[in-house]
Image (tube, rainbow, N blue to C red; front, side):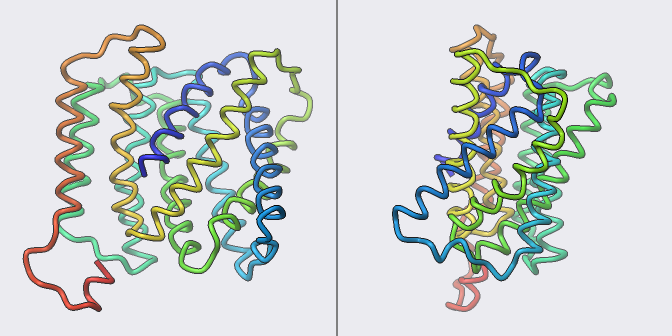
Length: 282
């Protein structure tokens, strides 16, 4: 998850640098193309050709259509709304994910998980102090993106039980690339040297972020993994201060502390001793 958090943060910086210069769909073309080339090369060079095969094509397709919609909405939000508002709305993902995992994956929605989710959301609100102006059209787009992300996360958890992480990444790029190309027709812009660099960063970190996320989901329940993703918000605040001279308010640290408390609550061991079978479910 530390690898995932670092990658997502750097990807957000790249997206911010490209916003207003390269259209969203073109960013996603390069993101998918770079990923497809790198993943294919890794699979061939490491002798993992069997990873190209899957019996779960429909789930891969559904997962990546929802993930594409979520990513597109997130990038649109980055280009229009203040970063704090975008991240505040995006961090409703754990709530939707926990509910979806409970309904469709059979995961238990325990009091501990609910407490962690509530604490995380409170921490976000403390940091961004959103007013009524946050609820506009673009805010609804980001909220929709968050719900699409939640569906994608839940599908990833299901795929992680049977699929190689390389398989998940390969089909993510293979499904999303043609969709992005279709949306880019008529809006293609030749990137400058600096923009090529940021596009490469976005494409590379998208790979490492999803690889780390998939590996994490193989070791923990999807709702717990996404709860840990809350720590991306204070990380972005620090990055903004160092790179863009943004001011970090006391509320950022207070909110981050509340989110950390939520994470620790979710990871605390159960008071009652568990049998081996029960522990595996936990």
